[in-house]
Image (cartoon, rainbow, N blue to C red; front, side, top):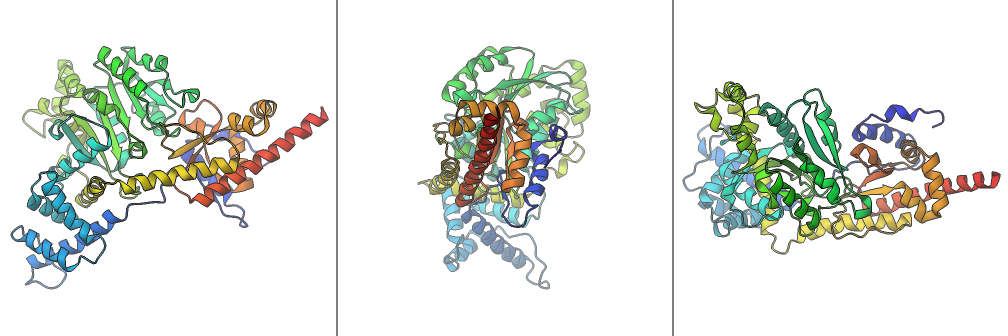
Length: 532
């Protein structure tokens, strides 16, 4: 590790730097590499997955019945007539197989608790899992959208809003949502080159990187959360949003990497700002909201101004499924802003969307998102694949049907116990915060040094140690991979550790390794002090 120029890594995204750290951590064969650098959970919801596969078997049989006179392997569209009876028989005959009973209960729940047409729901699920049609409607299957709306409203803490006041666009995870939203905001003249946008930091790195691309060239105004306030936004920072030149405010809530939800006080300040600035666009990424206690999204307090992004990836352990939604209120500032554009801008947009309808001006922003996601000309093939939508629905129903919320309690307990274990073995105080989610943790270099060995040692560390070099040394000497907090907009030297992707004993090992590394540094410090 001697004579390495660490400055060359300064501009790398932490997710690219991760690869360098992993290579170094794996370079020694006499130990196990512990990668706490990425938030891919190692827990997942099994019941809705079993239900998915069982539904697939039933649906494939239904398809084969349609073409029963043809050779084996060739099927047709499932037949609506008698579908419910055949499904009930399937559930009865296979009730000993995991996932099947859940399917039967899900159909009953959709009918009796959500008040939806069970026959239409079952047909949509069977056709959807077979993937035998383009997604119709392209934004989201009709009954699927109604079910996921219910899930979103409940989990995001939205009260008093009927499902009919909400629109959803099913997308390929939160990543696709971000890409689509940035693109459509620009295409629809809602942001333009040189515009100011505010970003709540620390934040998921791409929110810092995308606005700077040549595609957008936006001026970033950072809204800093204060670590001394439990990573909440001070009112003075939020009040920056009163600047009329700021077009939009982007944030992750609960935050990444501090992993805390926005406090009620912060939500109240933001609601007051929106009253003064009814033109402000808010984009909130709430993927970690389902891990929080009593979570309330910004969408719950100012729905007309807010674009809500939610991903199923972390809570259900479904990063590979690529499942997410974009949500907007039917009455929203985005559509009002488009309606208020200049005649020239409106004419440009009529040309862009003119192939979709005879009245392109009437197309809502969320439907423009769908069209833009396929470069407009391919709008007729837009939409998330129908099998993906089926799994999304089963995840949603699994959560809503769990009256005791056993799964939620379990996954919360998993990450929080890992957090406690890491800090206990590190030998410092376990952070306590009612707003904390504990999906990630930020290990503060200065605070950790101060708690372990005192103020003078901490001052020496801050003056003499390069945080990036420390991450490489930790990877090289202990096999532990952490990501730099600076890559997420953290102002103080710190390392982000995911609490989702390793087992509890491994977090204990990470704590032990970091403690040993700190002890070595302290011994180095003592030798320097003695020489003086």
